[in-house]
Image (tube, rainbow, N blue to C red):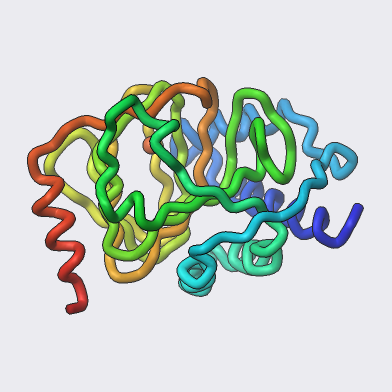
Length: 228
Ligand SMILES: [Fe+2]
């Protein structure tokens, strides 16, 4: 195994260990752990593909530097070490239903890397995705849903979430978010970038559907004014 593969494997292990420590906290954690237990994630199965950097590297470094919660220290160290080994990609309209307007903030700065998945830089899996997801500061990730059940581990200190209503709630670092298949959710990012672990448990090729809300522009306007 190369040093690079070692670092990627260590990052995956740090995430799996965090989930193991939270078994029983949320049904999505248990389902994810059961799926992971059925996979061969041994060193010999690690993929070796060229890394891919990102135009958002500065935001990404800030986001990683912002992972400071004590219970996330292992993930933070491993992510810092492996950042330049990973394949970073941006979401684009192909993940969404035709004509979807994701908003300026989202289009301007979203980023992810797949550690396990169909085109992952860690382990191959045809219908399961686990990776790191980032959004730039002051971004609204508009209300949407998808067939794929989704688990988030919030790594950044504070992020706003709502689930099919107009009411927002802030979640701290280390918190877990479970979006069952088809459940609508939205995320808002304050002055610091948002970074998380994300998992899509199945139906990973299903498209995201935006769920139109009449307060998007108002929220985007409010977020844009933060800190100014
Ligand atoms: Fe989602």
